[in-house]
Image (tube, helix red, strand yellow):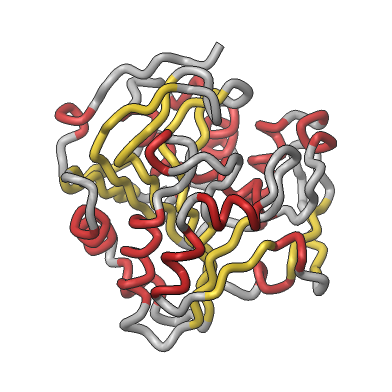
Length: 277
């Protein structure tokens, strides 16, 4: 597999670090042939972005600005979680106001009735997943958070794709082994672009009860495994110890080591994160 490029950009919270990271991965070229883009945010809770728990609306707005130069439909999406109503989170986090100011529609995927079943060949634990058809017909930008996670070690771009499943009660997937489920989902719904919001990250008892960490960092990449692996290294976590990232690399979904980090030096950004216990 050829070397993967991951952009690592630092700067005070604002549009420019996001623009710069996207430019470094030739974002415009990657999405130019799509007619619709879904920006998948992380609303595992309705806590605001400054807690490190949810995707920063400013990061999503910067992505929208880059997309608006193309004749493309833009949707911001999430689905209900077991303990979280996505519609409430959309409002409380400020994402609704941001979308309205940019004339972009928000969709709770749980409410979409037209669905498609995707078979998973040689899955880790699942034989298929059923998702809204528009998910299958669109480019997907995984707008994730830089944070630790009590069950999976980290929650970055690949874990964020779990929220594309429209089921509210997702315990059944956890019972199957959440790391295996993440690999299965990404094997049939690979994000077109991954953007990891690290303006304010989270360490410790993630994904919701950890401590915020001001990192002023944005990561972006086309290869979801490489982007997540780089996110791990920013947190001084060996990506080989994160089961879903290691297994995805073994299955050829992306690179875990053959990575060209462009923009900021990785060594200049690394900060050891407290792990979830």
